[in-house]
Length: 281
Image 1: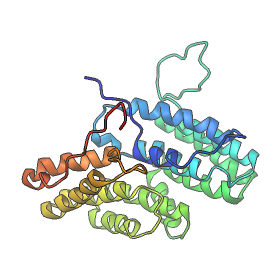
Image 2 (image 1 turned 180 degrees about the vertical axis):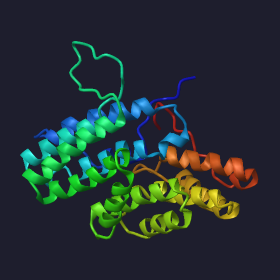
Image 3 (image 1 turned 90 degrees about the horizontal axis):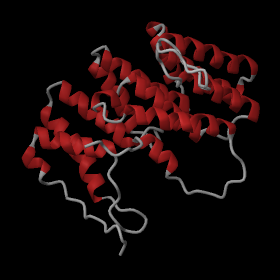
Image 4 (image 1 turned 30 degrees about the horizontal axis):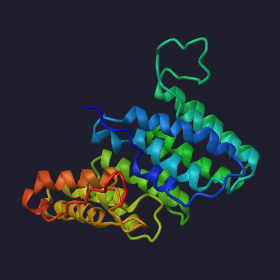
């Protein structure tokens, strides 16, 4: 059975803010959000491993958190340029011939796409600077993971030393690279820094899941189970604004599955959510 389409939690968190009457369509939002939706749809059903890969980091963390949360902090021209660069960074990679009627540009390799995006982000820095330029620096660093990993990591290290939103996102991206390099203690320290923040930008469940996965890789089964359990139990007990059971995020569902796999008896302590009637009431 095909899995239902869903958005990953970062995009859901951004979309869950109270909606106001629209009077203006932001150029960055109109460019980026459709590409986020397309990208997330392509990732459906491809397994949990890809959810935490660098590719999805680019799609979800960067786009959902920066492009939407920082939507109104740059002037219109800078937003449009940033949106165009983000659109390039999310373009389809394929070696198939492009249809004559196609309007979206495609690239043959991820490296080609990253190079094109990096050039556009650099243009944002050169032409506009300011907050848009600061965001572009982070986008460049993450895209460089496809083209020059050593330089990308060095840039992320520099960005992570700050105190703003760029630094928080850079810490998360840097932690991802530490995991890939099997520097698990270093990755754990970065994730724990983020988890201790009041507002780390990235969803706390996402960060805590990463912490749990490192414990699991390190053979610390009890700590891993406890971390996964805490995510799943909190989500199972959460209520929405109407006092009804809140829908569990995909991360929380994955955490519950991890507990079931690692410690079936412990999993029984996770409350079962009440099923809401589709007819209300």
